[in-house]
Structures are given as C-alpha cells and as structure tokens.
Length: 193
Image (cartoon, rainbow, N blue to C red; front, top):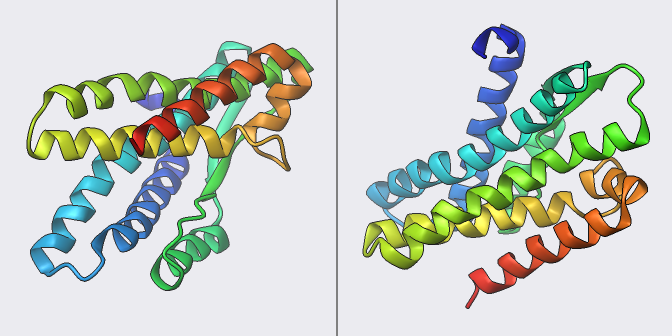
C-alpha cells in the first residue's frame, strides 16, 4: 500500500499532519507548562493525525478503487491560517489541503469517493468512544478527544459548500448526505455531554 503513496504525497501528508497537530495543541494548552504542552502535542498527533491522515487516504483509495489516480496536496497558506487562527483566536479552521482525483469521475463515483472520508471518521469514532467510556484516566481523555476530533472533521467536511465533501455527496445522493450529516453532527453534539 505504501508504494501507492509517492514520496511527495507522503511529505505533504506529514507536514499537514504536524501543522494541524500544532494548531489543535494551541487550542488545548491554555496556559499549560512544557510537560502539558508536550502531552497535548502527543495527544493531537495521535487523535488529529489519525483522523486527518486516514480521512485523506480513504479518499485516495476510494478513487483508486474506481480506477482513478488520486493524491493529497497540502495547501501552505491554509496550514498557516490554521496555526495562526488557533494561536490568536482559539479556533481551528483546518483545511490543510485536499485529495485531488485525476480523471472524469461520474457524479456517483465522486459522491462515493467524497463519502469515504467522513465515513472513515465516523468509523474511527467507535474505538475512541470505547476508550472514552471504558478506558479510565488518561485513556478516557484520549478517547474523548479522538471522538470529538473525528466527529468535528466529519461534520465540517459534510457541510455542502465549496469543495467540501458534503457538496459532492449531496449532489450524488440526498439520503446518503442526510444520514452522514445527521450521524456526524449527532456524535459531535453527544461528545459534549
């Protein structure tokens, strides 16, 4: 599988992973000392990193299953915006790049390729919810953050605007859009209770 991810794409994924992990760390720390900063950075690498990388790879491999080449490309400006907004506003607007599909995908193929990312995040909510509910102590924190981050990424990507997944899913299948949006938003709301 690694051979299907060229070195440039691996580098872009790694840089984007680090940048959004830094952005999330900045909103988690809130006056923490160095050990707290390191803890939240490690937590972000695990939770945000897994959520982000698997979301993008899901798009890539869904496209490849349909017979198209696809690659993630980072967006340096948006990576900078994510870190700066987290540092100064306390909000993460994470659009670190996108997975580009090369070829003329049909509306249905484009919808299924787009749905692969949010579905991956929803599936990742399951083990993180189990950690949150059953883990205890540090594992509960990891579970809660992982659950919330995956639900946030899925919900954000399901917005039916611009180049986000939701617009392409809605154009393909209204019922699939409604189910994915309801599940994403529902889990996100639940994670706050």
